Image 1 (tube, one colour):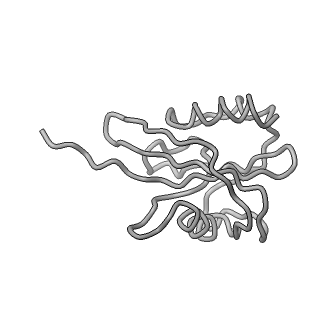
Image 2 (tube, rainbow, N blue to C red):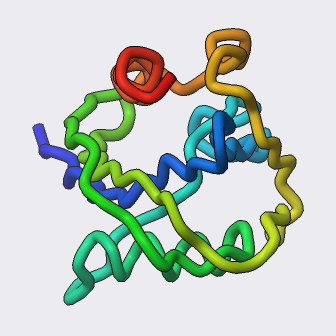
Amino acid sequence: MTANKRVHVAVGVIIRGQQILLAKRHGHLHQGGKWEFPGGKVEAGEDTATALNRELQEEVGLTVTQCAPFMQLSYDYPDKQVFLDIMTVTEFSGEAAGIEGQQIAWVDIDALPQYQFPDANMPILTKILKELR
């Protein structure tokens, strides 16, 4: 039996007033069709903030100017293990857009529970609802 390598993912909880930016995963991807907090894999030699800034520029056209650690969690799907390194992004430049063709939305914090998230994102959602609203 081979152990799968845990994927290190930088995740951004991007805050604008009382709204958080969400992106919808393409249908063909793992957990496709669900909404998520934007971000992506941390590459070798990158720290989380560097990876998050790169991923957010590539995915949603935002440049991070201020971020801070929010939480970390490991989650095991049947087919994939992830280590989520979550940061709040409180200052950024640029206008959010779905650069990779994905839907994006600025969602009021109170409305977040109405969206369907990947299971790994549920602890993040819980903490946002408790601490940021």
